[in-house]
Length: 459
Image (tube, rainbow, N blue to C red; front, side):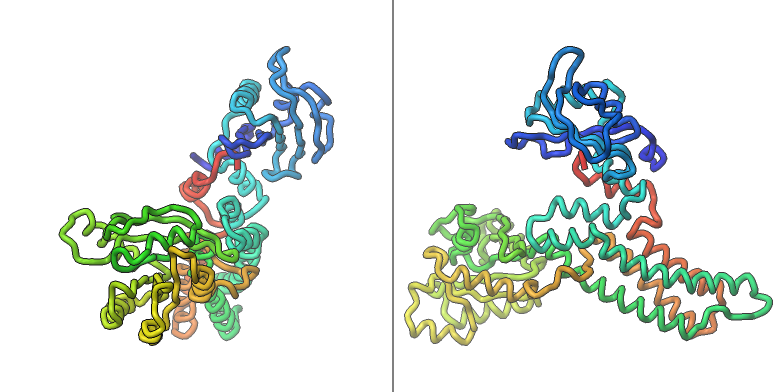
């Protein structure tokens, strides 16, 4: 799939709304130079070719003399559209039969089926948005919490792009002065003040460093906080998962070792998504399948952002609990100590366990669940994050920033050491290249295909 082919004048068509839903209305989208003419060729109502942009028209779609459906047609005359091309959106009844008939009609009239993400790709190629904004469109569609939605909106509206644009402009200015020095190399003159350049590079380096650090929190807000629920068998891990989700998601049994594999599900706590992972109980076992489950538990614990570790005070004395906590602490991952079945505890037992600073819950009786949710938010420290700040959420972006930072380190070395202007210019160009990879100022066909192939068709 070449860029040249993708920016052809083909008119594309696809279902823009989610297929297979029970909603009343579906929207079919066309984009391209012939979009209005193609829609008009099967539309009975007003002549669409003579109507203004951003207008809606009622009529019927006909296959020869047969009325296929009554529709509303919305016109967006290029360049005042999402793709900057002529765009037509046909709102039809949400029948699979009708949708397929209409798309087939448009294809017969000269359109072709759109590829995944091709509408947004055209918006990028036609200059409606840069590459990081285009990627934010996919993030916005996938957002499932207030925090992930807000970050995606901020990036789609250009917050991240604008900051990168300013950094590149400052670098381009000095790069041009360094390049000018190369033209006068025989005169041995310096057009770029090295002290000013060093201050600029150091300032940019710090900004990029902050953006890189923001990725950990940004990625968590985008994809959810991975939380592993762990503990010995039969301490109430599955019961806790069900209590958090408020549904019977995991099988609960008095038989130890019921959970043999990990079970995952998500909940939203005050705008932040948490991905809970219920795991097999940790114990030594001769059961091959259960042993595999324990192995996966330990792997998931190492990958978690947070561990919720459960104890049953009816099973273990304080000394055994302390040993288990020491093993968890050795993983160097934040954890919350939970004493389950607290409704069965005596005051003497509570006093004994107080030194562990645990949360007391009863998963079965739904006691302490809200307090646990508050503690989870407190542990990951996300509730106080300002999602209006520029935040990196894309692994491709953070890798490009790391490469930029490495190139800037070479520039700083070149300023402090007797490095000629041509090597200095090369390192600055390299840093500009990596910044340009984020916004799409520097792209390859393979990169574009990889990014947009992950979009849904119709977007």
